[in-house]
Every structure is written in C-alpha cells, then in structure tokens.
Length: 614
Image (cartoon, rainbow, N blue to C red; front, side, top):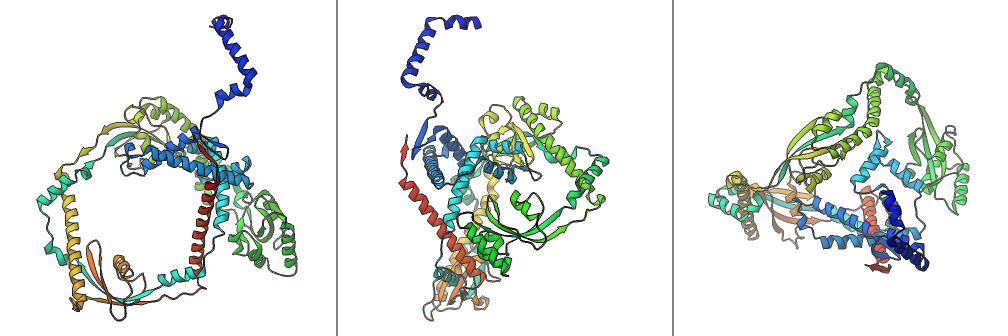
C-alpha cells in the first residue's frame, strides 16, 4: 500500500493537486486553507461575535428534551420545532449580549477561579471531597463537554454578578408596603351557613346510560399508556463499601492517625470586610483609629462591613478550623492571640480586619466511640476509589454486551427487573428522567441495545434494557365504570350544592333567615380564620365592602360542601412600620423592583445590540 502511495504521488493527479495548493497559498495565504477546514458555520452574529451552529443545535436539542419532560405524556410530534429554534436563538443572543456587557465592565473569571468554583460544588463531591470522575460523568449527563461546561459557568457567573448588583439597587416606596400590609391585616365581621353533600343527596343520581355516554365521549381519557418491562443493574457506593472488609488493626491505625484531627483547634473569628480599591486604605485607617479610640469591633462591623450577613452579628463568623478560609485569612487568624485584632488582610473578597474572639480544642473521643464510624469511613474511602473503576468497567461492558447478564456476572452485580415503566417514569430508579428517556429511545426500545450508564443520584449509577414493550391500549368500560361513576356523582353533587347555595343567597337577600339556628358568627377575623375551611375564608375576603348598613351576601363552593356568607363589616388592618413583618414586606418589594430594573437593563442591551441572523 505504501508503494502505491509513493507511485501515485508521482502521477498527474497529484501534481495537479499540489499546483492548486500552491496557487491558493500564493493568493489567499495559509489562513484561507486552514480556515476552510476548521471554521464553524454561524447562525447569528452579535456585536461582531458569532453564535456557532454547533452551539445552537446542541441547545435546541437540550431545550426540546426539557419540553418533552414537562409533558404529562411526552410526544415529540407536539413540540413546535420552529418555535423551539426561535426561542433558543433569541436566548443565545440575549446571553451573548449580557456576556459581552460583563466583559466590557471588566468582569471575568480566571481558569483558577473556575477551578475553585467547580471543586466547591456539592454535586461534584464524594464524601465532601471533589471527585473528578463524578464531575466528568455529571457534565456528560448534561449533554456537555468539560470545556463547554467551564465556559458556561464562566458566562453565567459574571452575568449574575451584574444581575445581583442591579437587583440590589431596587427601592420600595414605604406607602406601597403600608398599603399592602393594611390589606393583609384587614379583618372582617361575617356569618356563615355551611351545607354538606348529605343535604342534597336525594337530588343526585347517576345512571348506567350516563356512565356509558361519558365513556364514549371521553375514550381518550381511558387509555393505558405504553409501558415497558426492564432489566437493570445498579452500581452503588454503599453496596461496594458493604462488601469491603476492614481489619481491626487498620481501624486502630486509622484512629491513631486521625487523633490529632479529632482534637483539632477551632477558632471563632469576627471580621470587617471592605471592598478593595482606591479608598480602601483610607477607610481601613478610619476603622482602625476608631477601634483605638475604644469603639466596639461589632459596632464598626455593622457600620462598615460589606459582608452584610456577618455584619448583622457584629462580624461574627463562628468557629472554624484550618482549611476553611482563604489562605491569607487563615494565616492571619491562626497567628492571633485571643482578643487580638489583625492588621489589614487582603484576599480575593476584599480587605479584612480580623479579630480572634475565642479558641477551643476538642477532646479526643475514645476509640470505642469512633470504631464503627471509622470502619465505615475507611470502607467508603476504598469503595470511592473502586467506584470510578467499576463504573468505567460497567459502562464499557454494558455498551458492548447484548444483555445484562454478562456484565453483571463479570462484576459481581445483580440483575433486577421492573415492570410498568411509562414515559412518565416508574418506581425508583426509574423515577429519573434521564434514565427513562434513554429507556424509551429508539436504540433501546426497538434496537435491542442497553442504555448508557446513567448516574441517577450521587454514588449510584444504573444501566437498563427493555425486556418487553406494551403498546398503548383502550381500557374497557367495565375497567373504568366505578371511576366514571365517582366522577359524575361528584360533579352532580357540586352542581346540586351550588344550586342550593344560590337559593339560600336569594332568600337572605329577600330578608328571610333560612336555617336560622345553623349559622356561625365571626367578628374581627383575619384571613387565617380558625375552624373555617380555607375556601370559605378566601370567599369571605373576596367579597366587596358593604355599603352603609346593607350587608353583602355571597356563596362559596368546595369539594363536597358549599357555604352562604353574609359580610357585615370590613375593618382596616393595623400597620406598624417598626415590626419585622413590615420590614420583610418592604425588602420583598425592593427585590421585585430590582428585578424589574434588571429586566429593563437587559432589554436596553438587547435593543442596542447589532445582531445579524444568518
């Protein structure tokens, strides 16, 4: 074959190809040749930056899957593909606009920052430690590559920084909170007459002809959905750990090794955090001077600290050991004596003054108290190392096998079976949408393949295959007769109750007092009326205000009872602007206003962007 290549390289065709390459290089340069092979087609350009077709199509696929998952009975034919594509493109344009705005403002994350965020995410941790295999598997289950996930995280984080900054500027007018709170605290005086289903039982009847007619008119409601029986293998960290034997000597050695950790020193810190910048040095000098003059650290923290959560507690951060704080913060904290305050300490969060409030050191528990816990910890640690390896082996074996018996036997796992799994799911682990979606994919449902290995939760992965498929089928009238009878009886009862309540309302409005001994009276009651069904209370507070001495009469209908309501008075609610309820409502309204301001900011960026759609 190599000789054939050498021979052809001397031929006429080869010389023509080389000649064309030389001409191309001389006219357009190397970029034209390389670009022709590596350039990606784009679907839109936003302020000069491309949205690639690959990114667009991947997002369309994810959005389509999301919409199918939201359907009660997923049906791809019901998804408007054109609308999905329009929505996705507009979302990607908006994302590009926001990302560019963040970059223009100098907001960015370094690779080290992204690494730090990822390693702290609990979904990527095993026993509190970052696990790279878990990270890669989770990202792939999202339909993304590692590089794509990192870029997505980079974009979302900086955009959220701007969103949070704008949202925090929202202000609420005090009168708004006062008005809403007055309505919320309003009380009412009223009477209620409740009638239950027994009152109208003699007016309710459902015949066989009614049932049959309803069945014929609503056959689509009485279909058993398609379902499958499946075989599956579960790989779990717990199962692996339970099979690992740890000797007494190993546990004792581990206890001796960890003794220092059990007795580790913890320090209770308080801090004042200010933003780094041109004014930081002056602000910090002011704080230090006021400390020297005798002002309390807690009061200054509340006044100056931008860490609003700890500031409310006088800067208190609670107890923590080593490995919790930023390296510079930790070094300063563990060099202080109790009651001592550090000089300015700069971290990625800003500039801190740190005060050591208290030091504590825990006693080492006896070996007997920790033996079981340490044995389990050792077993889980070894199982964690083993889990990634076995997971990879199972994924490869299941991908290549025509059944699950072989992979199960090879790895010492058990094949289990389940029936009645629909597109909406089934018993665990088939309550996981990703696993169900795989099970009903064409390759698995009709092609006879195994699913991919799916992580259904932390430290638990499942691979499955279809054993039997049952098509949707129409249920016979005899199967659903009781269900229909109950439904029609309930409807007829509600109708009779509503009619009876309307009759009673008319009687009261005419000046009569029907069933006078069965009314309940309520005075000065708020929205949460004790001893009154919520549907009645809601109706009471939905009635209009009485005019003069004339009460307002209304009715309410529940599931199996109805009520007639006579509203005689509406009492204004009290408002105290110094209570927590008022402050919480004002804060909530400010957050809403901040969200509206951010939405307006988004719209402004979108309207001023230069967008070209291809």
